[in-house]
Length: 102
Image (spheres, rainbow, N blue to C red):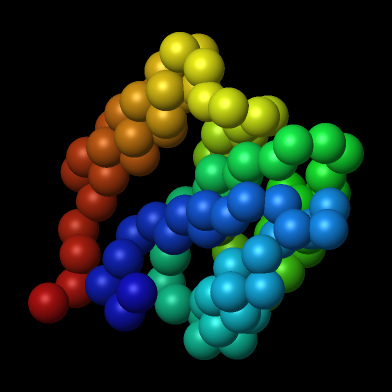
């Protein structure tokens, strides 16, 4: 995370919120405030979920551009895989031209 330009928090919904380990990861990222440029999320859920709002709320200390998340309801469909490819492509495009500290 020290040299990362982007962080992605990926989690299933558990009781309509993020999985406890994703909460822990988001808490650490927010507390450590690495010099990130971008953030996003990959969320899966079966029924009503406030997971995305929860993750975004936990990253309030970060001065980042939030990229469009991938939200999957139920079993992943072809469009969900395309959304993952879109997110990966967007991250690659955003990283072009960035300089990273050594």
